[in-house]
Image (cartoon, rainbow, N blue to C red):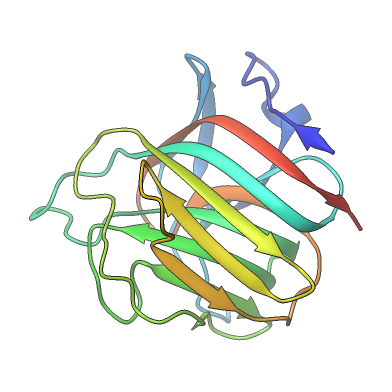
Length: 193
């Protein structure tokens, strides 16, 4: 199955399910996180997530154009935007953290599994969000092997790879840990659970 949110005015509640404390808006053919969420609660996890309304998926290809709207480094050196996969609940999902920083908790693939987020990839040396330009991102998830790979822009090789079978199915989405961002041209292709 393939789905493409329309980003039509007044379709926010129809096409997206919001999780966290961020404030979202549809405008000019895109989904904007206009006010960053504030991390809180009993576990360390992203503070603003918008899930594409649709079925739970096993194998998934999630394509989106993303742009960080946070202040550029050095004002915001760790600016971020996220892609979410296998979302089962607010405390069970994978997320890809795209950032301008490269360290243990930025720019990686993470698992939230009823506990603080845990990195599951080896550290990526490519930090794609050092500007305020649009970047094409593709997340490919193969449920049987647990492989997640992240492709950015024209790169032929993935910038991040992880293997984890904890979550076999779920929904996809976008978001941020604690910054603002915009998302457009979303295409979700996958196998229904």
